Image 1 (cartoon, rainbow, N blue to C red):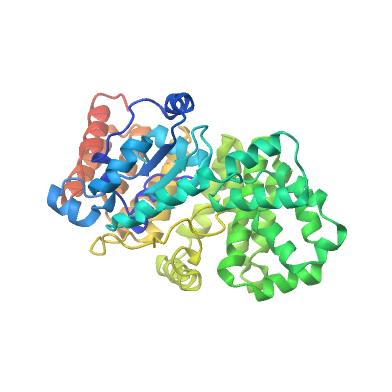
Image 2: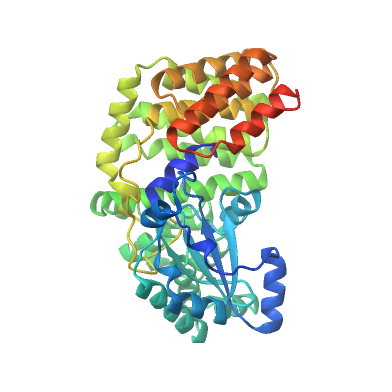
Length: 462
């Protein structure tokens, strides 16, 4: 589920950037820029950036924490001379739309596009080393000059080329830049394989790492040899198994949502539940099933199914459980996974496009209580569903009150204020939003968005 405030936490982990303010960016939409890029035959660099979470700090302190080698003159000169530059702030609706389009989940991320819009190179995270960015540009130029770059391969596919060697190269290249592999493309690939290929360990692993949709042709053929599949799950590192399991789940749920296919959604959620069977953690399996079905119903705006399931989910897994128990479970899972599960943070990304590493950019920041963060996300999900039924809003208000009791933060007070307003408790909503503003000041955050919400509460226009 996509929830408010969670992204801010992920940005803190992944790194941020103030560099975008130093470069000269195009003012038009990406679509308009790509049209111009086609005419000029000039590549595009698309920057996905996050606003620093402590925006009221001094310029000097922001530069010390978030400064980057992109600011260096040699890098900026090359970028502005050879590319059309587009900024996609993740705080904006357009930035969020483009992040979904390009499967961007870590900020900052830099996409280097062919003049026709095809992603040829992807890089992420910040560094003060300008050479890293110059190497990225050099790598992009090599790909642009290659007769086998992704743009050329897509053209050959559209023209009907279907031999196995070509299709494997196409899939591998697509994965290397985080491109989504459609079920139709993967099914076409397995259809061209000889029968003996499905007894080949490396081939079966490759198909799994492309994320076959559950019950698709590719999925069924890759799992014909159950002994080989069992060996794969027994011998591959946990991070690698987790990565392709997650990809199978996400691709299946995406296909189910696109097709509005509840049966397929249940199959994808069932696969998620089954992924916990080997650990005998049936509670986590049940939870995984429900989370994926919630995502399905939320995406289709099916509130008749979504809201009852959502309230049962949070009552069962959060309100009925001692917070310390949840925290211990989350800590144990984090130890098992390691940071980012030690895999690349993009779907279908086969290998890193640069030497950048994920780092904590602000080690002094107070990390949110993950239990409280999750509970706040549930309360906010009820609010943004649009329901005005008091039984759902009241339950969400209970979750929000517990969230604040555990970890008082400005966004959590803001969530509670919205819920109180929806329940027509406008006086309490005003007082709570004022607390959000006061807390934001204590946290060193900008208060602009909270002030605007307070204005709307007072004018009864929220």
